[in-house]
Image 1 (cartoon, rainbow, N blue to C red):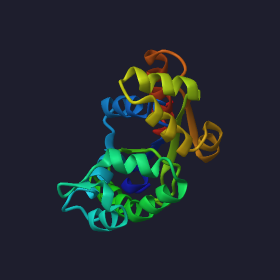
Image 2: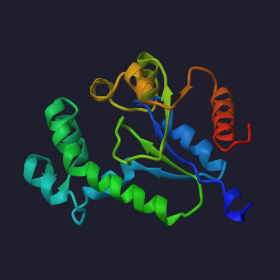
Image 3: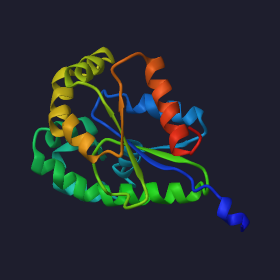
Length: 200
C-alpha cells in the first residue's frame, strides 16, 4: 500500500441554518476541535467596504444606502430583506465574490479541516462540501435573537426571507437539532465530527 493511500482528506463543511439557529455556536465548537472557521458574512461585509469589489455595483443600484462614502448595511438590509427581488439582485452582485474568497481561504489552509458559516442554502462553493444544518423552531430563533438585543421586526423580516426549516433540512447532508442545552449541542457536534472523520 502506498503512503498516500492512508492520507485522510480534510473535511470541507458548510454550516447553515436560519438566523438564531446556533450556527455561530456550532462553529465555535468546531473551532475547538481544530477546524478552521470561515464566516461568509464577514467576507460579504468586506466586499461592501469602499475598496471592496462589490461596492461600486451596490452603491450604483442602491445610492440611498450610501452615507459619507460608505454603504450603510442596516439601510441596505431594510431594503433587501423586505423584497425578494432586491435580495436576489444583491446576492447576484456579491455571492460569486464571496464564493471565490471562501475557496481561496480554504485552499490556503491545505489539509486542515474547514467549516464555513453560510446563512443561505446555496451551492456557491460547488461540489465536495458536506452540508450541516442547524435547525430550531422559528419562534425559538426569534426569541433568541431578541434576547441578543436585535430588533424584532428586523429579525422577523430576515427569518421570512430565509429558507424554512423544512427547506434547510432538504438541502442538508446532516442535521443538528439545537433544541436542548448547549451541552447537548456540543455532544452532537463532537459526535458528528468524529463520524465524518471516521473516528466514531
